[in-house]
Image (tube, rainbow, N blue to C red; front, side):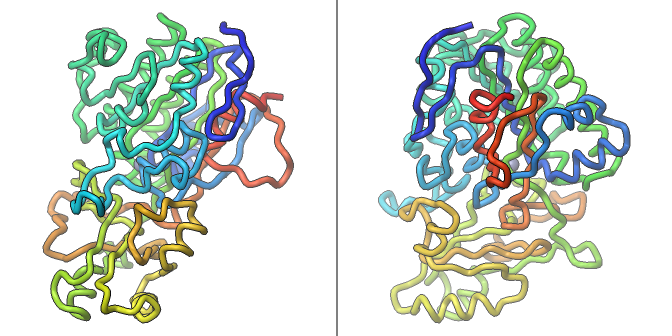
Length: 407
Ligand SMILES: [Zn+2]
């Protein structure tokens, strides 16, 4: 193992690992998935971690994939790293764009800095959209399940990852995409023994299946087997999630949606306000780009206080805040959100215009995330840790717990 003084990243210090450390981000892992899988006897390894560290913490808002994955690997909120959504309105360029490009990242990652300090680092992510952000500035191995068949030594630090892992290339809409991540992690640990590894799955199963269903339990049973192998290889494992997941339906199982662009067009005239949904990404089949968080750019003639008052009166709203208040409360970068932020309640989602959402791909009742109701996530280690009692735990404390706080 490597030796040297602690490194400092984004104002926090991290000791170099003395044994392999694996941080696993289980996409969409509402804590109930683990509780129900343990009750069903599907996950004996997870059950054994109750003797280690078993906490429920908070993810960052909005409770979406990119902001939270970047928080976990930077140890900091979006106000520091700049990734405020999967998607945003770039006012300088005047366009709505995906936030997949590392040019939007404003902070170093713990992974890159550990690699600079001499650690062997490996990152495997399910979807390729996260790969360049997670691997930004990092020497080491970094590839996605989605494009495991395209890896090269020069670009990904490993040639032909598909053959290396020895499983078929999974479909982007499948549980197999996540299994491939975990299988790759085990294979890497068996053969190259990296000092630090970050594994990030996808929430395909969680968007379709509630905690305790046979499909969900089967997913966690699969995961449990790989984590047990990593444990047996001597790894410190920290498991957390990017966000939770809830049913976003009414009593009849129909999606419960407030189409904000339609509402604002009726108030102000078509296209006067701009509704941005940071959940938007290229893979929308399983959620129709509907989540519980939106940001709105208002036309100059609409008074902010009036907009907030009227939006608050819409059904299913949990919080309607102006930019400054929202950025203070949710630790967001002020230059990357609109005039107003809307968070909908547990069983309600917000959309743009009804005509812009294709729900035809939904083959199960809508489950999604983005709001305060999906902020609770597991923070679990297979080792006991020392923490100040009662202190708030965040998913982005995972590296701090695994590197600095083992008991
Ligand atoms: Zn996610």
